[in-house]
Length: 276
Image 1 (cartoon, one colour):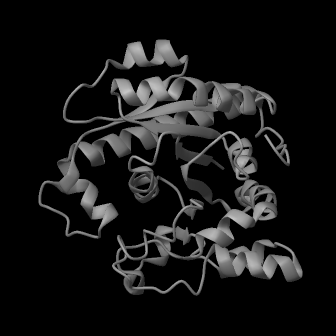
Image 2: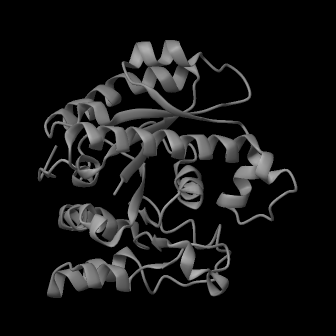
Image 3: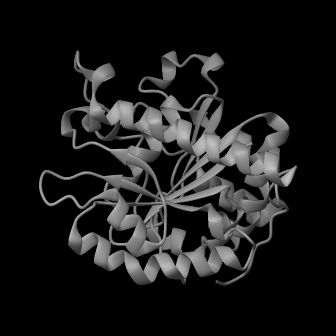
């Protein structure tokens, strides 16, 4: 089982697009969790073109949890097929979405949900399903820290330009300290999303941030619109820099997690803290 926590620390430069694209190319069944508390689901009105409403997802799950506790059955009741057209989704694909809390004010107040959800997601190995968490922007004081600490990989997305890299120094160090508390200091990595101009070299970024780059995604607005807006796939989609970058990212992250698991002999036990 793999659990991957995706976030940014200086805004949200395409984190949802990356998380969705990664889920679509992931080699095994996967649950994509929209855990961004600053906005409602962007996948349902974007990638799914509004084919579903928000009657299922994190909000009804949180309400049910307050009354009866969080159970695996309750969570699976709130999942919907992750597909551009959910009505034609192939059950064999094993792709699922747990959509975002529709009310951002309510989302920020549901502090206790994240610890319970982290425990439940860490147990999905029993069902053979991996987890990808779209956290949007993350700060070290974030109530969603339990999700970060339970993950097998924490990937911070940024553009390889000087303003972004300079802004990453302190937050990346803080995230590393939070992971160190649970023995996961080497679970941290970067996703570098190229821009048109001013891209710094990967080696320099890794050296300055003391963090490896796990993946690089090309500048490809046309291909990105397939995931972010539900645009039709262009003929060149399968050859696009974005898709090839996502496939390489999936392979690199999966390999790192598997290699670490083999070295440890088993998946590390999970520990959550009420506050970072």
